[in-house]
Each structure stands twice: as structure tokens, then as C-alpha cells.
Length: 235
Ligand SMILES: [Zn+2]
Image 1 (cartoon, helix red, strand yellow):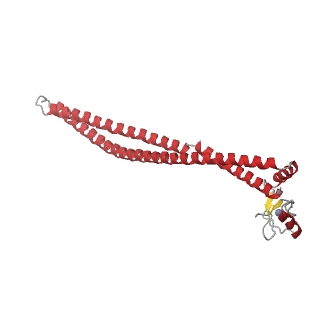
Image 2: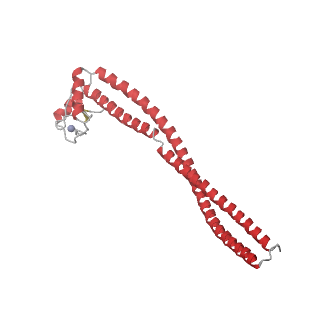
Image 3: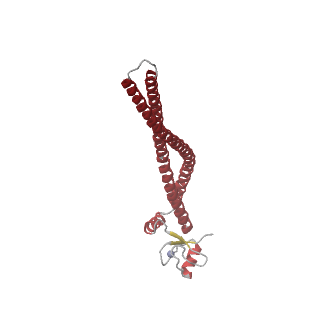
């Protein structure tokens, strides 16, 4: 058996498996987090409530203006009916009519403000509703994409698990121990590629010719004299 190439394949499969597992965890985390849509929904709901309140304020003012106008009309009707002849009473009706007119003017100012506020509330509600629709569409696309990616990663992980198990089963206990011992000490990278120029790709140190030849022989296990990793020659 060519030990270094086999250990290198094991290392690469395990590294890829760890990478897939990390990406899978990220995908699962994002899939479970719909906080952006929830925030947009909460804003849309609040904007809708504000709009309903603004509409009610306008209706209330319109109603009050109607009531005060009717009252003023009734006052004036009485004033000009000819039934009231007492000058004092006439003056009192006149002043009441004027007071009602001032009240109407004030209410109409308020109504104008309420209408402007309503317009703003409407624009806010429309914008919030558009943002919610956009966030929902984005989330749907994201969920579809992540669900597909999750499936792919799960499949890839199952495949890598089978590969890793197969390689591990093919190794002697000694070689497996050696691999695991170095994996623990070398950040899960116990095997380094030896370049054509006989440089260890993990630590960048030039490897003596005798060791490089041993590595190129492939039936023997050669170690980098600097970082102590197993040297593997591709090809
Ligand atoms: Zn090295």
C-alpha cells in the first residue's frame, strides 16, 4: 500500500467533511432565523395601526365640524327667524354664532393637519407593506436556496463519511495511530504536499534530497524534518 497518498486522501476527505459540516450548520442556522421578515411584519403592522388611527382622527374631526356647523345654522336660523325680537337675546345669538364660527375655523385647521398626517401615515403604511413583501420574497428565495444547499451538503457528508470509513478500514492500526497522533498535533493536517522543488508546502522548508527521494518512493513514509508532517508527492 502507498501509505502517504492514502493518508493524504484521508486528510483531504476529513478536511472537506469538516468544511461541509460547518457550512451545513450555517445553512441550518440561517434557515431557522426569519427575524428579518418578522421585523418587517412588525413594522408593517405598526404602520397599519397608525394609519387606522389617522383615519379615525380625520373622521372624528369631520363629524365634529358637521355638528358645529349644524349648531351654527340652527343658531342663525333662530336669529333671522323674526321670532326673537329682544335685542339682548339677539346679541347673545350673534355672539354664539361668532363663537361657533371660530370653533369651525379651528376645527378646519385641525382637519387640515390631520389630513396631512393621514397622507404621511398612508405613505408609511404603503412603504412598510412594500418592504414586507420584498423581505418575504427574499426570504422565500433564501429558504429555497438554503434547503437545496442543505440537501447537497448532507449528501456530500454522507459520501465523505463512507470514504473516510473506507480509508480508515484499509489502514493498519500503526498507520492509523501515526495519522491520528500527527492530526492532533498539526491542526488536522498531518500530511503535507512535497513540491517539485522539494519544498514542504505546509511549512515552506526545503527538504533534503534523501528524504525527498524517500517520499517519492511512495512505499515508504517520509517526514518533513522541520514540521514533522508526512510528506506526500502528488501524481
Ligand atoms: Zn514541513
